[in-house]
Length: 194
Image 1 (cartoon, rainbow, N blue to C red):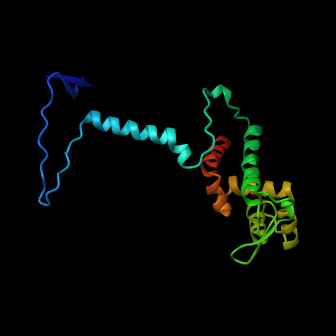
Image 2: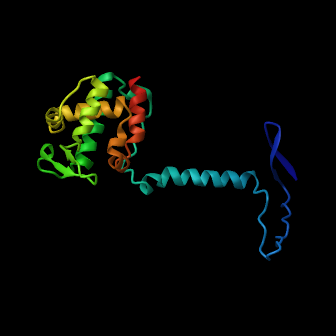
Image 3: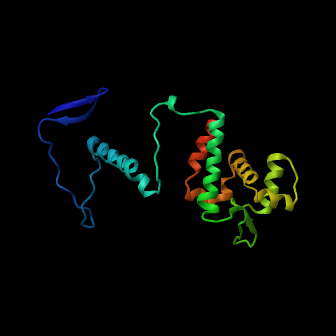
């Protein structure tokens, strides 16, 4: 029997057939597990698991699209492109989840489980708009201004973008963030923004 070595360590044997031990039963009469699977068997198991997750993972977890970039020269990292991608995240949050299918999403009013109205295409509550305007911009606004912001597409999108990317506020859209799998995309865009 000859040894196969890698970096000076024996990783496998070849030649004569290895002798297998007869399975041993434990006190309950069940066969005991082998304590060592062997390098080749472990490697095969790891490779199979990785193949399953990379090939079938998107289908299992609902990813519709996987995009691969072959080289960094094909990717646009300009600040304008990054801002465009951030706004695309906010637009998908609104159009594919929060106000999906509504004829007039800016006029949408939904009473949440806390019996407070959520307004507009991004479903802002008045107190949320007031709090984030104070936190992000240092500006104190009243309820009427908050309603005007929540029901105006451009202002609501700008506020949502700042909430998500400047103050880690994706949790304000917790269910939609999970449904649309936005967390990893937002993390990448934050890194690119730095």
